[in-house]
Image (tube, rainbow, N blue to C red; front, side, top):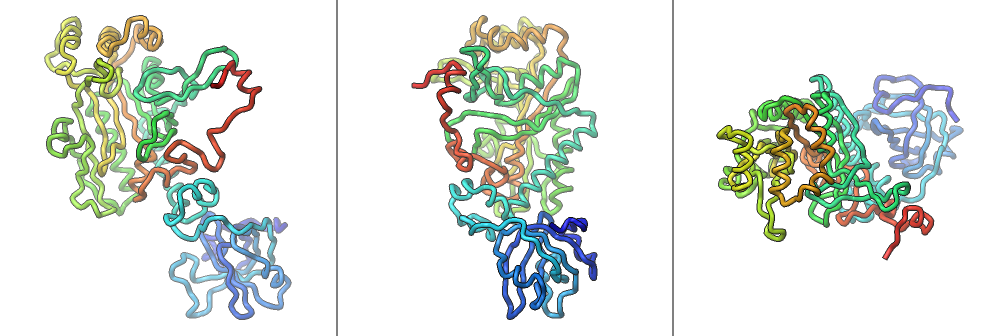
Length: 470
């Protein structure tokens, strides 16, 4: 092992002409030109050319090198001969004259090609060998940009007095619009946890706790039927504020996405301030509640951010013969006439379809990339909303009693928004699917082909969990 010298990243070798360096990485390609052996060596920072001269101690060893072998290489940085420069590489003016070679690990011939963008390869193969698929340049770029975006989100909000709080993954099953993933409890026989569809109730309880400004890069889980570009688990930026107006929340999001886009994607063009459309205007003018406002939809660098506001508070579910909240039951219903509480509740119960909500969506290029609302902080009105949705008093107490009780101990007005990270990265990187910007995604029907999940569990586990399988 050549551990007597500090490792140099490939991106830094152009500043070390004439010096000996130690490089570590993967053999990208190998070429034989006459008696010379050339390899392109790859690490996380870039690619460089190394040359092995005949009649040297390591020349014979270099003959064995093949693509994707892991090696460490000591060599001298020299200028490339005139006419042999490679303008396509940042390191294309220099090469490494190999002096010492250590083969760390060999590699079998790869089952999929990684020297293309990968779009010509079947997705099943790419997902089965995802650890190889992620080596390709396009995927490395996507995952690294995802990191930069999340880092920007964290820094921006932290600088504005928001604090990041992790909320539980094992929680309680509550109706929030999609089917829950449930987890059986071994210690509490016959009872189940649920994985969170979102941190909705926890972030509202953090407002009751007096934290006032919360955010989280949150994992969310929804057991939905196969539908388009959805994933069983996804990531969102979750934000909640105490004492906000709707304009303050939308203004914060606009400032965040303007600065993030201008900083990380300076080539992108967009209109600011972001247009604001009512739900009614969006449907009448664009026949969509997530309209694509781009002038040239073939321009990959054109963005069209917009907010859609004033959604209906309730919608009729014909199949269930009941009213349901358009967003979720915690959304505050607008009271434009400033009716007293009792009168407002009576009017709400009588004509649910007449009321709008303090609900807003954030859209970009025809995609919904976020959504949120001002929350209802009056427990009496909240109880009435649950009743309008057809819930019996006991059922409401069982499913939401914890948050209704919390609201009896001094809850501030609050509101928030959640924006999808996967979808935003997809749009910004001009990718056709969110699976291209998630390190280890599932297939369209929720399978992990690499880990072979979901999978059966053994009889002992089934017995410990007090389950019987049909």
